[in-house]
Structure formats: structure tokens, C-alpha cells
Length: 65
Image 1: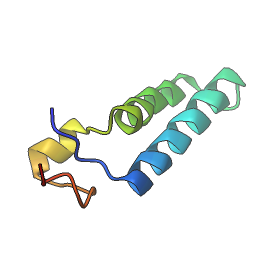
Image 2 (image 1 turned 90 degrees about the vertical axis):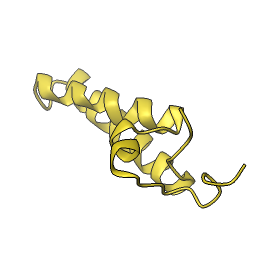
Image 3 (image 1 turned 120 degrees about the horizontal axis):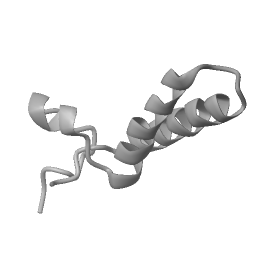
Image 4 (image 1 turned 180 degrees about the vertical axis):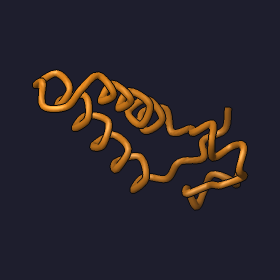
């Protein structure tokens, strides 16, 4: 598992995840809001399985060792 999510991407994923989970807990949106766990997890881990499959990296230093 190599990191493939850049800093800006991480922040946006974490914000989106927290907002979706918060809206769900607040009863504003339905159960589908729990999908916010996915962007939250990928933002915290810095790795996105979809990016790996598609060969995408939003982190400039991710390809370097």
C-alpha cells in the first residue's frame, strides 16, 4: 500500500467524510450518508484503492522513494 493521495486531496476527503457523517448523525440526510466513512478513511490513510487501480497519484512525492 503506497500513498497515492496528496495533501489537498486528503483535506478535501476528510472534510467531505466528516460533513456526510455529521449530516447523517444530525438526521438531515438518510443512511446513505454513512458513505462518508470511505473518503474519511482514504483521507486519513493517504491511500485510495480506486486511485491504485486507475494509476492516479495526487501526491507529487508519492512516486519517489
